[in-house]
Length: 187
Image (cartoon, rainbow, N blue to C red):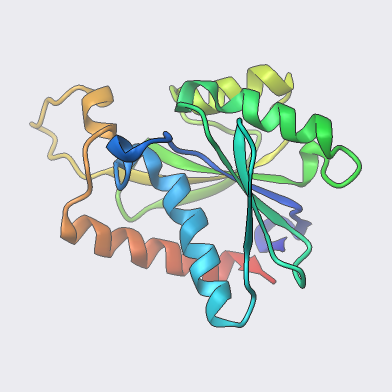
């Protein structure tokens, strides 16, 4: 896979989220949702993904594609452990500079996204875990906005990110996923 903005070959997409049924379709699982979206879109093009499960992560690969999608089987704030373990076991196939981290971002409005290198949101425990475990920030990121709160809405950030998307929000999110997939990534 190629990240068009940086003309960078990506070998590993790290899709962040919280594991467990209580977190399915929550805002904090936007990375997982995007990983699912990529697999669904590529399945339509006859690429069939195989899932390998490990205690710390699930890895998805397709025979004809030269990249993998990793979803940690940890809580968000321990995501770095899963990624570090994968990198240790597969360092010859994937270096940090060929990783693309995909995650939710409360600093961005729903419908917005940013593709950056080395740049993280102000406060995101999954990103912090990854940077700490890898002792590096030298990877690419897709930061997907999830904030749809009115200015006067004072819900705590933690409670908000663990809330579920409304149907209207899911539609906006799907449109963002499609835009990223169609314009920012190349197979």
